[in-house]
Image 1 (tube, rainbow, N blue to C red):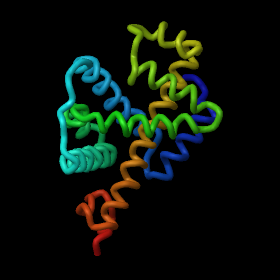
Image 2: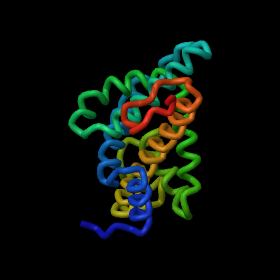
Image 3: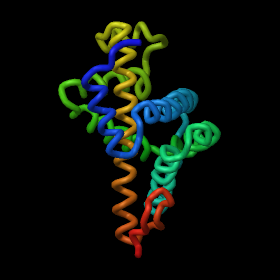
Image 4: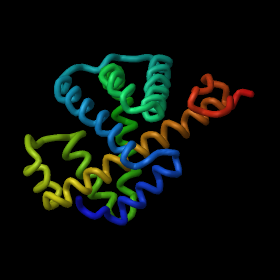
Length: 190
């Protein structure tokens, strides 16, 4: 097994501050990524439904709630619910907006952030290539660096999505706009 980079340990520390092990974040994020990429490919030319502002807010609240739920629960429970979540989440262009926000935050991560962003876009979000060799060449990375950096990028993306969802959930709970999520040890409405 290859030695982990200093960047990996920094990402692992971020995960730890959120109450997770980096390996667990990576595995759960990979479930999301693989399912997302497959569904995105299948629905590439499907028109997105038109939503009212209220429907958009309800949709985002459900997606955010589910992200928090999926990350917090044990892995075996996640596998069963992942497909339903992806099918629901992918029906909205609003999810693409959240992905873009997370990618912007990733791009700011130290001096490696731009590489992470390019790798995630090349591999998952704007995949133009059929095989890993083409993806590696597009990112300018050797095979070993590509897979190591992919693990780091996927883990960082996962913990950023969790953090973004958690911040927004706290905000809406504090404003009394939504009920307290069961993963939180308190009720912001009390």
